[in-house]
Length: 323
Ligand SMILES: Nc1ncnc2c1ncn2[C@@H]1O[C@H](COP(=O)(O)OP(=O)(O)OP(=O)(O)O)[C@@H](O)[C@H]1O
Ligand SMILES: [Mg+2]
Image (cartoon, rainbow, N blue to C red; front, side, top):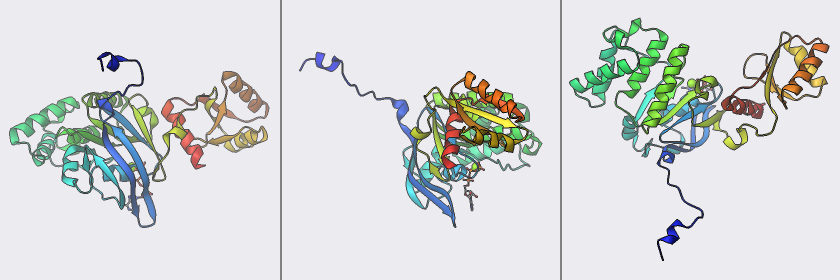
């Protein structure tokens, strides 16, 4: 056999280290009495990437993240985080994970630096290391001016950032962030996105939940969809590739809009917010036709807009599936 054989064109196996799963879950279940909070979750989240965990309220995102953080035992199924089993290697999982809960309960009387140094020491840093880490993180998250202020003076968004700093204290391999952007102003959201990107570039596994899709649209690499405690087959909720795409419609009188669509034989699904509905249209011409017909039928239409973004398309397909 010559060396040439190894350079022949043909199928190649490309070993991509970024595809190493930082998180692997298989058949996870966790019930609370009759409530099936997590009811068969199977997915993997690659290392070096931001994975969006998407699902409506009550779909099991927080419960799943708690299991992956090693803070809640699953009833059945298995999960590995940074190569460790969440149940049998709980201690290793906890030290590999940076967990940011959706509501950050601070010790309000302690200063920001004291909170971070306390956590640093709990993760094995000595006093000097913990202090220097706290200093760096407060700077990184634009909280330096609050270093010696008690946490109670922080605004909600500033507390969120302190929560992220706390999650990063021990330089964890895997980040589990539950609605991290909630309460952040637009600039802080952009900064958060930059931080998430940077963490992924450093090779960390980032799993971030949200139901506000615009927050994740620009930052995610892969997405996991949850619906009623279950992972939804992503292939079934990918953005449609046909010429048709979703358009959101809303009217001052939503009932008249729905009646109009039914009479016109235009299928629709409930949109994510309030009274709006989503229809599939082939393009602007179809949208204009629809507007003309709706106005002629005296429907007080006030919104006709294409659904924006891949995640939103996929999310709406998910809603459709539930309908
Ligand atoms: N400790 C608990 N005891 C009883 N039921 C619970 C508990 N925790 C969660 N649940 C239920 O499990 C389901 C999933 O809740 P979970 O908090 O995981 O959803 P979520 O996707 O995070 O929702 P949200 O977007 O509102 O944060 C809900 O029906 C919830 O009421
Ligand atoms: Mg939640």
